[in-house]
Image (cartoon, rainbow, N blue to C red; front, side, top):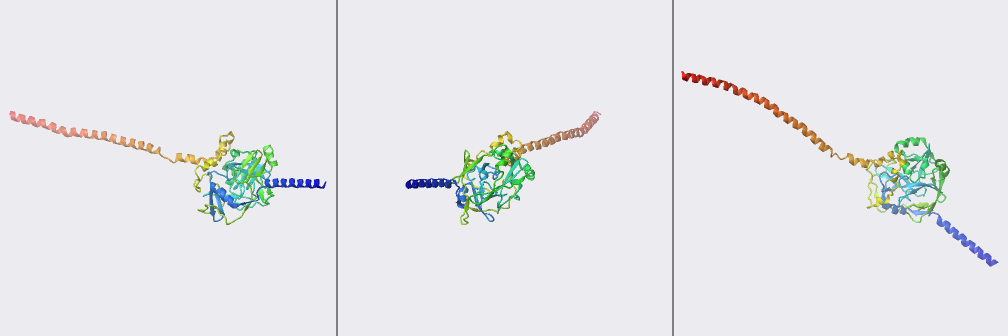
Length: 385
């Protein structure tokens, strides 16, 4: 009996150790070196040394790029509303750090040290959901009720499409943003990460989403991936590289870092029509390979009628500019207009002079013709006599 008890106890301990190993493997990594940021993001942008923010990263993206809007979508996980990016580098800038906009560089990512499902501020009201990136220096504490940022940073959609993967079709244009902000309130739902004790915003909860959409918000299971890369979705499971904290080693530096041509300014309004953005050296074919067709497909949908006209205005100017700049048709139009008035001025001048010369000639010739016959007759008469 004693031997049997010992065997049972040994089997119990063995099973317990195996279960603990599975639980440990299922947990996300605790730490990651900041050098991982430097190395993994270097092929997709430029690292700069800014005198104010230190090492910052400028992504190599189109001019209409917007964080937490371009090339991704929202899902509900156990952490709350989680941003799923389709960029191969999206695991880092959308789950660590802060974003800011500079008129010269465009959108800039400032690295952070704590993981979160998405570092954004949420709004809700009168049938809208909205969110905006958190700017530099913003610490998520007990509340975000007084968070302020430029109006153009906000993204608003009808609340029923919050978890629609094609929500880009319903984004409201800049003309409505100010009115929607004045009609909505900040969603002040803050949650604490059990792994690193970090507070982060979660956005609308599943009950609120069900009230707005009429459907249950499906909760996805978030599993840690073994290495950085594109976020993978398999059924109801999402695999993401998500170390909970980053080592703050100030001695490390990105390879190929450059000094910022000019200091990064305070958060500015987004100017999507500006084409004088910071130039980034990209490899051949890099941008085409990294840009899925997700943001462009909704243009063909019928649901885009009330939204697409104001939304895609930043993309239209580059197509219209080459039509307005060339002035080649104006040259052939001006030349025929200059020739006809010159020809009629020369033609009437010739006949106008001819009638003046013709009557003058007979007047000079007629008097001698009248006098000559009289002289001849007189001489003939004198000879006859």
